[in-house]
Length: 137
Image 1 (cartoon, rainbow, N blue to C red):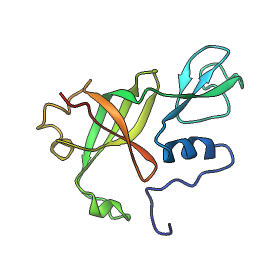
Image 2 (image 1 turned 45 degrees about the vertical axis):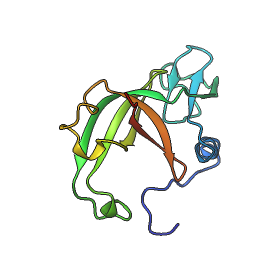
Image 3 (image 1 turned 180 degrees about the vertical axis):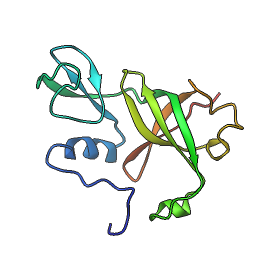
Image 4 (image 1 turned 90 degrees about the vertical axis):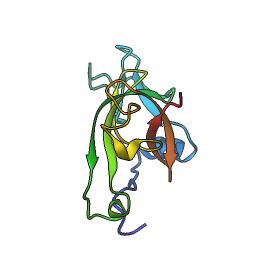
């Protein structure tokens, strides 16, 4: 969609990732040489540089590593979403990922006990984009 800054532009390599996300699955890459997982998708391992990497479905579980509440963003469609929570989460498989926190308490970050460092999160998908929400309970 023209004029949107929140939608990906898949290329020949990342289309697998975005197709899975559109279907509600979060993919990561795992290295066959060193065994470590990584995200964002690359054709090589950023830890040992091996090209022996494969796609793997992630659990969708993560913990909140760091976040910031965005109160102003003039790019479409972000202006309609402010305030929103931009975050880095640590996936259960190990890699960290930039994302957005949505759901209960997300707009009151810093005031809501659900949003504290180490908070448990789960992936949800908005228009085929992985975002995270606090785990209920």
